[in-house]
Length: 256
Ligand code: ZN
Image 1: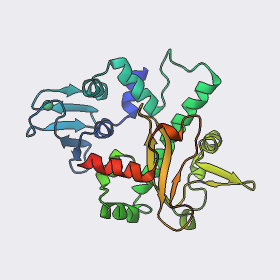
Image 2: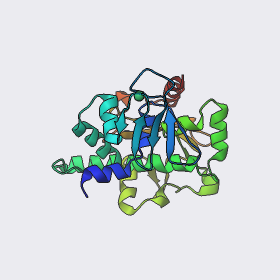
Image 3: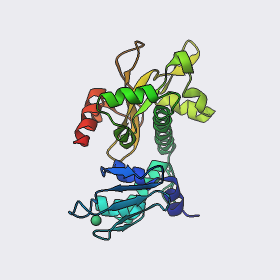
């Protein structure tokens, strides 16, 4: 199978559409979503996104297509750029774009890992045994579940219940090395432990769409109130707003 198909299978079109800023509502527990079409003015026609068929369709203007068509149309970009953006997102190497140097390879591994870590923490927030209380807490603070999905907000659980190696234990040995490199795992006195524990996590996204780091706020008393992941080969703190409060203000402003 070629990269175009593989990438399309790996992404969820509804997630991409929502992250692009289009509000969607899921119809029951189906893979179908409806919202307001971003491609024409009329607010009364249905814009459908089907994450099973991996397609979108507007009954008003007739806009129709797959995740690539959506990105090309929405961001006004060429197919190759949409492909590249999604390839980075799912960690798929494109033929002819295989990184040449060791450094580029390492960077690619860091991006891949960071995406995985963001997903682990995000899934933990939505794990009904672990994250429900935190989801309720967020909702009380005007962060709805939909916003959590859109911005991939996550939760690193309490070590009292889930140990100091919640993330670490989910990783294979090469991922553990990368986790150390990007600062999601720390080592002290020969012991390793997760850097983020008992914390609400907001991922830090580069303008290319890649996740580069995490910012967090504690939900207990352990450690500093706010904690940002350390600088790494993919993350420079001075290049973007990295404070938890700024990320949160941004998320709240997107909701208006
Ligand atoms: Zn339309």
